Image (cartoon, rainbow, N blue to C red; front, side):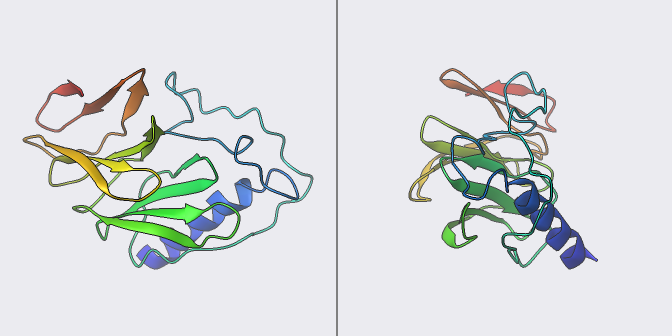
Length: 166
């Protein structure tokens, strides 16, 4: 069931990413959960009359959160404890970064970094181009919320009942 759910999520992501015959990174930007800091969940892109699957990706475990799309790259976390960067055009893996198990925390992309929380309570900042760790921050509870980037700060809630501005 998990594998089916993961395939459905990634297929839906890829189908909806087909905004034009050739994908343009600026047209497909969705850098955080619900698309933007106000969390409107609205895209200005126009969908074609018919949708088609461009590619699929097998994450090896469930994907329980939304993906982020920025600069021609799709970023997604899996329950298997990986943040993965995929080429938007082809689905080819650009890099993999090991985390703790990722639940509902969707990645956010800003200022050259990808941010995501995991169920061990660790918040990760990863270089968006290379997948190398920039820094981590440990909370005292699970991180199930999705980060929101505002200017040079990233906001994240933890099950330790605190909201952090990092």
